[in-house]
Length: 505
Image 1 (cartoon, rainbow, N blue to C red):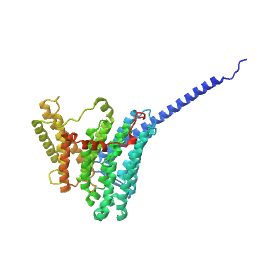
Image 2 (cartoon, rainbow, N blue to C red; image 1 turned 180 degrees about the vertical axis):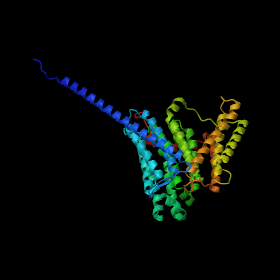
Image 3 (cartoon, rainbow, N blue to C red; image 1 turned 90 degrees about the vertical axis):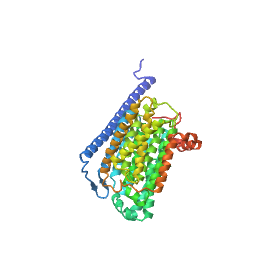
């Protein structure tokens, strides 16, 4: 007699089939939800960017200022940073939409990007010191979460923990410095502190300024606080792009907001020296790296050093221009790093070799670039800190010229005509952006004030030039202890180093 009941094997098979269909349905639903979340956030970023950009353009000549009690304040600088950060977030999240497709933490990534972007936007319009400190803390926490976005990857978790310790210490420094000022002066607004800080005693302004500087250089990975950045290579490429194009640039924003404090405490020379040493060390270290991301990390540290130098010279508006241009450049480099890996073969560093005529062309165009920079920006006409910016421009133009005249595939005519076209165009674009940023920051105190030359600045300027030529001439290769030292200081946190058994994104 046949039974109408299914046998155990048939029942189990049917159950398994139903379970598989159920799981597939759940996965499909989850995938659809992730796609909706990602698309929505990306759309929000692009809408914010377009809205900010349009408003900035339409009101450029007559930018209004809004104040919401003692808590929030919106001005031209606010709109400038909003436009910049929303653009970077839109680009990175759009790239991540394809790059992280199928990644189980994709929705978490875009939501963290949204949270980070909003925290930066609130930061730049914060007028109350407590709100500003809170936003600075949130920025660090969210960036640490982005570094360790893959919760199943042990090295990523360790890198996130390592970085978060730095970010929390930076927030503690900032809180200590600003609250000391606030309680002593009984003023808890950023605008109020800027107006009274010049009348406060040095024993208050000096430790406060040092704390603010410490918070800034921690976030920008300035030496000796650079290890968190070289240890953060476990983060997905989109997170790295947001980190290098946006997060590290926060120091330029912070220092610009408290420029009056730095002038009142006479701490600008400290910024200049710290930034300069970092720029030299990181440029040396970059030459020793074989990993593309590590090279980019050292490059970022060096550029942050240059930005801090500009703050130390009293040109906070130039530092903001630098952070914008660096953001564009570094976002492009990170998002195209895969192509760089595919097309680049390891090669030894080549020492500087230049013929007399090439040297003449390099010096000539470097000098012409500096003169053009002086005329178009007004820097360098007086014996003050603007001379250093002019010198950096001359070195940059000279370096570009050397790369061109040393290129074997170019004709003599091309070697003579291409450099002027490049530096005229480059300096022209820089001038337009510099003047625009200066206009938008015009109502901020002490953001574009050249300081008189001092002997420490002159001495360090000479050291900077010597270090630059030691690097370019390849002399460092003949100094074993320098090589070893540079390799040691650029080593990532040991627990963040990936092994062959690790899972990567």
